[in-house]
Image 1 (cartoon, rainbow, N blue to C red):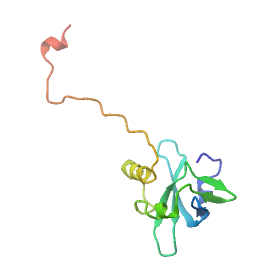
Image 2 (tube, rainbow, N blue to C red; image 1 turned 180 degrees about the vertical axis):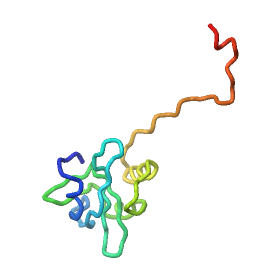
Image 3 (tube, one colour; image 1 turned 180 degrees about the horizontal axis):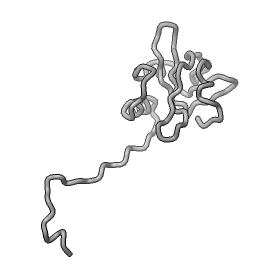
Length: 125
């Protein structure tokens, strides 16, 4: 969700699923480590229930409320990582997979052969 709104202003706003059913209230907003853009919202799904993470990118802010393009049941079944802590890249990947969103695979690690020493002939030309 690319928006000019300050992410702190999302906190406390209502959130609705794809069918217009109220999901809950936004408790926290998580920023992308690399870009600083809002990436995830933690939505309190009930008075005594946990927060569910939803991606902000396919979501829309309409009339002061966040509209998430997923069913409420899918949102409530999202992996629970607790709030108030940093999301690791692995946790974010789990969330992307849960919502069926495509994410680019991380670049492969360079191929390194730590067990072999170069021959003298290979080092001289």
